[in-house]
Image (cartoon, rainbow, N blue to C red):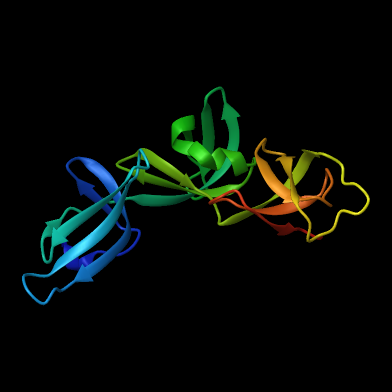
Length: 187
C-alpha cells in the first residue's frame, strides 16, 4: 500500500480489481479546501485512458508488476513464443498481449515483457528498431530528400511512410511507439 503522495509516472495501481498505469499526475493545492491529486490512468489490459482524482494522502493499492527481459523466438499458430534471457524459460504469449508490438518484432529481438502474478500484461519494445524495406514503389528521377512520402512494407509486414528516394532492401529506423520513419540506416 502507498498513498497518493507516492504516485509517479509509470507506477501500476490495482483499482477495483483492474490494473491501471499512471500516465500523468499532478498534485493540486487549491487556496480553499483540501489538496488532491489529479491523474491520467491507462488500463494495462484494454488500453482505455481515464482521468481520476484522488484526495491527497488516500491509500492506493500498488500492483507488483515484474518486467522481464525476454527474447522473441518465433510465432506458433496464434501465440508468440518468448524466452526469458536469465532463466531460459519459454513463455507463450497470445496475440492480444503482444498487440501493436508485433508490427516491429523480429526473431531473436529482445523486448521487455510485463507480468503480474505470472499473467503476461504487455510487450514493450525499444523506442526504435531498424528494419529492412521489403517492398515499395520505385523512386523516379527528380525525387528529393525534402519531397513527399510513399508507403513502404517492412520485413515484419508493417507499412510506414518513407521518403520517395528509398528503395527495397534499404534499412530504416522506425519509432515503435507511433510507427514513424526516423531515418535511413547506413552501415
